[in-house]
Length: 316
Image 1 (cartoon, rainbow, N blue to C red):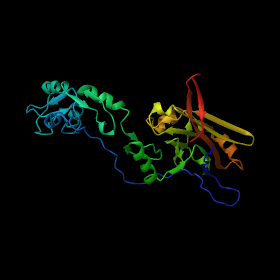
Image 2 (image 1 turned 180 degrees about the horizontal axis):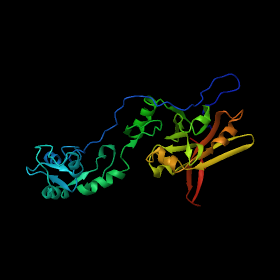
Image 3 (image 1 turned 120 degrees about the vertical axis):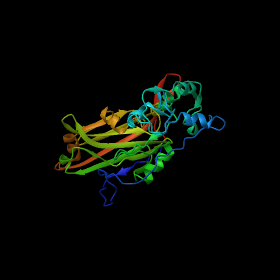
Image 4 (image 1 turned 180 degrees about the vertical axis):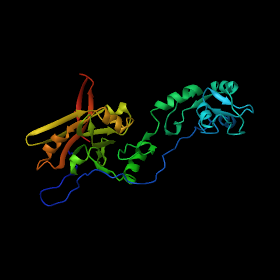
């Protein structure tokens, strides 16, 4: 069994390896990945789609659908945005419902908007929106934690985006050995270190490390997210370990799906949490600089069909 170690530490033989420092969010311009279309042969009449499209936000309209005295329609959300004036003819809107258009919408059956990404489902017009909010084929949000990134896409697209646009560390293997470094750690209450992405078992995992306040206590936290859905994430487990001077802390858990934002995972405390004083103790020296070594591994749980027991598989 051949496992790849990912070393990000300064070695004692004079070789200079990479240390991981808190990141400065890069500035780049990137458009969201949007490859969502309609299946051939299932496209409703263009005129019906145009009727159900709000002229202000261009989204599909759902009840209540409003109209002005001249018959121009818009959605209820945009009605307040236009200050009760029709965006087409500028007449006062009032409170007129377009019941006929609402009835037309009830008669429609439409494919999921994520058909081109693999979803085969067809829904009544009013059920479609609810499904799309939870559709397993919907695009993923970029998992980068250092800045608010609006890019979305499938997993291969996001892996390329993380590598090329965010310049994250990309590694192959199921074990890792990182050292996180920060000078003057007592002066920093919140910090995010560079994301690391692992290719393991043909899947991608994101390793996060950051500093924040847990109540009144400054802490560091490391956790793993799976680039895929929650159901697939449950097939894997991981461990994280920090230690020095004869002491160690170990965390074992299941990686969270990137459907959950990194902030949601952090705020749920689902990871290895180290109080700052303990982290500085593990760092050694005069405890004035953070040099925290985090080691870990990822494994796949294999189900024993006879006994119903999960057997760890460490082979990639």
